[in-house]
Image (cartoon, rainbow, N blue to C red; front, side, top):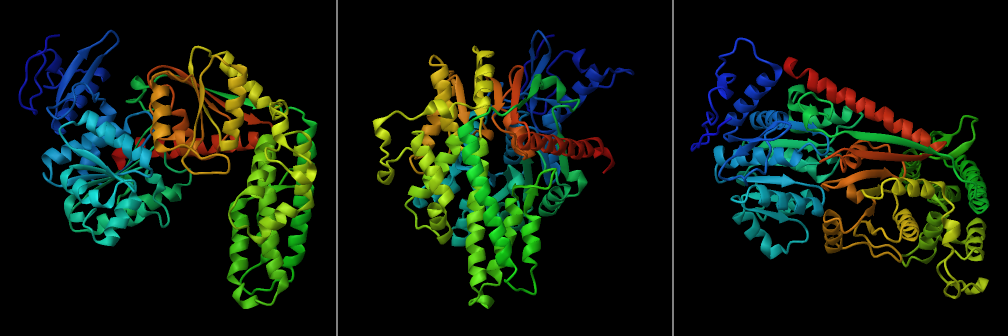
Length: 615
């Protein structure tokens, strides 16, 4: 197939006549493949680009050709151009799985507006975190080198912000920064300067979050600003999507969805195997000893709280009912732990009647015991993660320098917690000296052997051994678990380069990672200078690793968007595997809940995709 030279961007006849018989409708019968090619070429023209065909062994690949696009940087996929075209026509909410090219769609739409709409007005891309803003800027500069792009976040000095706003066509910012500038009246973020606003990770648009205020402001302006929201997945609760539709002032037709199972997406998706690994918890006498101490005190405190609430009067609240509704129970009716969201409603109710009951000692004891129950509930969660996680939590509560609340002081003096501290010291697991117990940890090595008595660590070892030549990413929920997993893998696989990837916030004995440290780690990982990366949730969004073959969920999570984002780290350039670990019992239940939510999301996205022509 020969290619012709081309000039203007609306010129489509760059191939020989046989290729464009489909476009010219010269065939009375056309195949599905030919029909798709016809749609593809038509969309490329609508968007103002020309196509470039690259002949490969397995298929013909189209790229968007334009003087402003870096050569062969945007592959012209039918579904991405279809979505881009819809976004250009009207406000839209785009639900597209991680790894399918949300950023490229955003840039296609941005370029179209910059060239063919209100020339001179800006494109504002909002992203929830500073690292994601930087990634968007870097991708914009790479793909659209002729259109200046810069970041506006809290890290940018105030005196530089005006210059950045005035001298760049594409602004990538956190919503907090833009909202702050609007309140200060600086002119930055003014609707009169903007023609397109893209809300990345739009599921963050809830409640009082700045996304909500900015969407309301720009939608209500008289500047005819296009608003687009992008997310990897809608919430499993349909009402959340309805709320988004109200913010963007769109009906069902404004929701555009694709999944990896969509017909026009399937040709571009690599196989991803998902392996559920349900693990029998390994017996550990020390762990069971600690758990019994914590659980017995937890139940005792709950009982005490219940008795005190009887004497706290209120016409508006049923305190005992609020407490009962916050309790999780097993199949036999025994209390296991508490639902934090429901339990928080109890303290809000207690605080609301505080002013009217200043002299009621039971009210203050109830609030204090509420705090203790909450802390002991966290202890139960931590001991289920492992003895290392419980020890780290108890140390932070005991040694942190912040002014302690009454409940926290009571917690540290509680006989059950004193007993746990003593037990940790006896097993040489406490990391600070305790003179009262004649305990000096520097005199003997930390007892990692006991920490390593964990069936999940051994299962992870098996996964690594079966994938020694592949890059692996392990997601965990807590930093303390990161430390444990990193130490175990470094000990077990001394020849494998294992590193952590965590957030910036400081904790006791853990200063976090600066943005520079994070960037260095990601660069090393992309260059394959790191074999195994152990990450908290910070690694879920925006990371693109071409050689990542294996992803491990160390614990199940029930947030569907986070599940999709984690899975999207692999299978971008070749087939990959995702392992999901869960202990039998409570974690297995969470895994099943996560699967059920995933099925709900699929029903929602399938509805909008299949019924699009009927809206």
